[in-house]
Image (tube, rainbow, N blue to C red):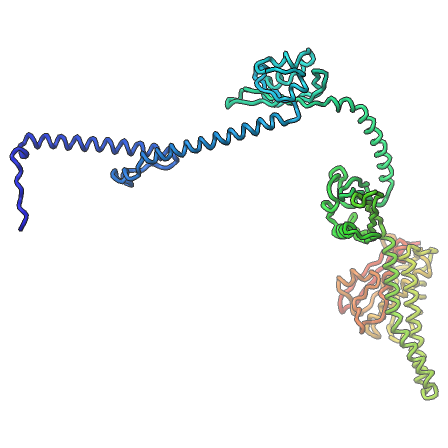
Length: 565
């Protein structure tokens, strides 16, 4: 059946009743609005307290606001605060117990005073060290039981801390027949005012009594150290001493400069922790593993030059092997190693350079012996010329090796310098090459008058012969060689110019180095690589200079200067 409409009673449709109901509805809406505004305000206040932004009405409707349950949030937050407060109280109680344990266990006598010098707290060491008395002293003035003399009152740390508001200290505080070092620490309130002062009394009586003996012992140690320092300063070798735990206990100035360390900054540090030199670290690590009689060579750079030092480590005498200290001595062996290296280079070069001409001499002489009757006169003469040429080459090699050996062994070059005509000396040198089979024409050019130079005749001849030999050796057969003389800038100048293969700038810079050859292959031009080295030593021994100007494929000019007579 279709629904039927219900007609309202006449009493409910009465205008008076309608007006009353409208008024009640308006009152309810006002009450709801006030309630929701109150709830929203308190919720926003809670969110602001928790550090969260407020909730605008457009983001959260009134009825949705009730779903947040602000009362529940407040209750839960209050419960969290109470739980946190309980845990905090427990931690504070534990901290108080720890502080009390430290307060009682500390070795010093500790007093806690208020600004009026009244005793608030103290530990048992106070009775033992300061008072020698029992009973409760809480609330008693400190000066009545501790600072019982005028000097003690004048040295009162409590007054100093109260005046400055900072920690204060006092040494040699005397009371109750004992000496103390006193430290005062203020406790401040949030406004920075001193509310408590903690005084710690450290008994130094025994230290004071033994101070004179200690001073005597220190004086003896100081004198012994001065003697050791004097001994170490006189040593040219570096010396580092370590204890059984490899900690540095002694180092002389030579070792400090060599290792870049400072003894005053390194004592007590393990030697391996402060050594950066890789070779020395390897040596020390080998010593730490127990290797005995270990000698190690290593390189150091001093003033831009490489130096070789030999490290030797020796153990101290000790009853316990684990407590043995060690002394590491660093001895400069640069000169000895240079001499050894030169000897090795000379032997190696001699073996290499002598092998080829010797093989030729032996081969051709053996051929002459074995097939003497089967060889014609022309072939026999050619073989003899080859043997002679190789013998001269052997003579030149031996002569160069002997010269460089004397120079490197610090025997130097003994010169007998006299006035000589540079023209005549050059002519004598050129004469030895006029009949060279290579057919190089040699021209002598004198600019101006003859140049008188102060030289050793035989030494200058050797210089010119080496230069001419190189010029012809590294030039095409028949190409000219020019020797030029002139005087200028207070020196006599001699240059030898060829039209040979020339050198690069890098090769020219190394040309005077021992055993250096631009082409060291088996097919290279024969030579020891010592000729220009000897030239440089001989020229510089006269007080002159030697230089090279060369271009690849265009030739080389060697320029020497000598003092004028």
